[in-house]
Length: 226
Image (cartoon, rainbow, N blue to C red; front, top):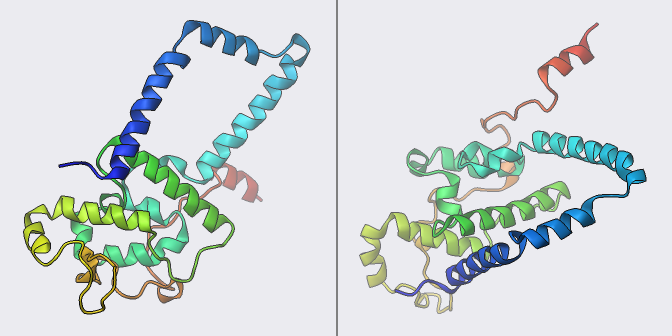
């Protein structure tokens, strides 16, 4: 069976990246030239070191505040680092899927590790930008790329039951509405696993994991010491 075009493209990009990396970055000559270009003149060495120290410290602070390391894991608590995902987290938490799946089991590709983290990075950057600039809609809707991923993961986990799915017309038009929309798993299973209500105002007092304090305990005590 041929792989979907998106998987073929992602695999091609991955192997192309590895080839270019071996042919260029690993070359001794290229590395020496690169290092020579990066070393500043003697009179600029001290200011450059100071600026690099400041930028490094700032980067570490941002990394800590944003809890960035958590995004490399599959822990569902990571998805509520951004509080606009509270309705999705709460509805998943009370569903049957919560006993056997995490957010990434459904919403991230699993065909190869490169595609998985590429998709996470792409989606994560878009989510971060929208939340930072308060562009999120009242009702969050899944994008087309996300639909394809969720559909593939439905088939991956429920492959034993896919025979019946194919028998009712996989990918064919909806005869009742006479549209060109393809039949998705959620065409029938509309409430799995997030239910029908998903607006940001529908879960005002939801019980979700608390975010860890941004300020270290020792610093907080020192600032509040009377």
